[in-house]
Image 1 (cartoon, rainbow, N blue to C red):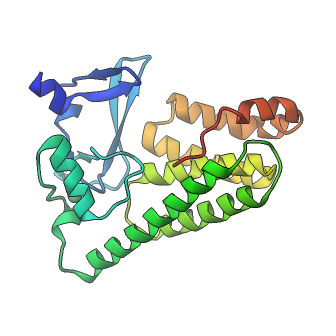
Image 2: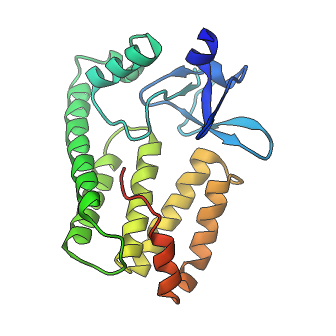
Length: 230
Ligand SMILES: [Zn+2]
């Protein structure tokens, strides 16, 4: 049970599995790989999300995708959940200007995520613009721009792109929705592979999005179930 609790990976809402190879990947706060479960093949696939040199260790993140906190919080969570002190490249580099800048950037990113999530709580999901939706869109764009200047795990960028796509639909901004869907599709390919259900869904969205704007009633019923929290 100890081995299972420490090493098993979550593959769905109610299932976790042990994998002899992928489960051996160590944690890094900015890892060079991501993993995704493939229901059809029954395999847990590992994808490179950064350039990897020959002989370099393959790493994944054990932290939640929306975790952008600084070193103290990251180490605290990793110690509580997995009982180790992170000594990844980012956590070990504690006296450089780049580390201090990264810590400051993370404080700002966390604050922007909090504003986005708080705005999402006051927002209704009806199609069309209002002050809350415009505020949400503006803060999300600020966050996306800020994250693009940081060294972060791209899964967070992916979450923000999802939100940017969703709010563009809500604001009935077709052009922007297509733009974000295309970006999300590219990033999904990088993080989950070209044949994953995520990537296929995004590719389908890119080709059918114009048609979806033809019937706003159907679009509204789809939007009603969307989540706007990062
Ligand atoms: Zn670390």
